[in-house]
Length: 270
Image (cartoon, rainbow, N blue to C red; front, top):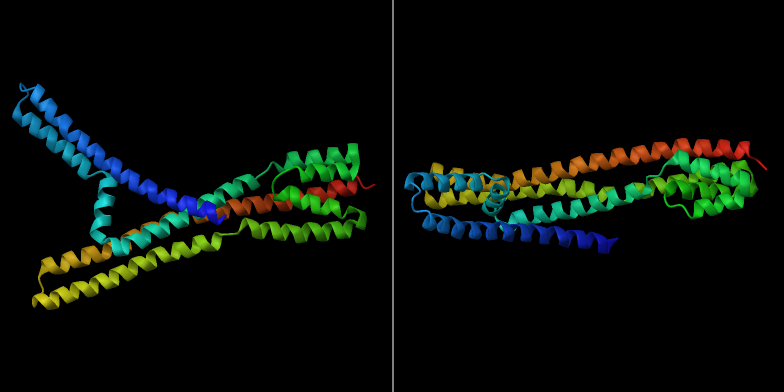
């Protein structure tokens, strides 16, 4: 699991770096192309060519990727890099949980019908084999109940309830880490803001004058860390709530399925 998280974190950092490199390469490629086009087509009016160049530059400057990269650089690598690392690590845990929960999601009605058919045709042992070869927490809960079938229905019910609680805790695993990174993002942003404002006041003291340029520039850079910290928290919050809703849906389905499972055992009691 740790290796998986590390790979996702490294992949996120590499993706960020490759995206920046690609963006720079595209800008470099566009410059010669524009020059060649201007040389090969001298009949084009200079005013129209200048207007096209200005339009291209305006589009590039207003693109989301360009704006984020520019603001990231303005905020300072010392404070912005930890916020980015928090976002990448949080998304790594989110991706891991999404994969796990998708694998844990099964068609409970189909599984119940297979278990009932196995009990009717081959008895408890065949049903146990079916649950053993089926992935997911629901099949594991059924297996624990079938494994204690000989001890009576009370033992089956206790096993189902106990092991169901264990599987539910596994579903919620690593959510605490996502919540931690969700809180760390704004905290690091606020810290960068406070330190940046202190530096801005130091600049004012050094200049000996409250210049609007010094105050506005320092506060702008200081507040950028808070903006990126809040963006990190919002992104992780959306995924966190999605994971919670996914877990609630799986848990509710497991509870309904276990009730039906007990009814099947009572109906086919041997």
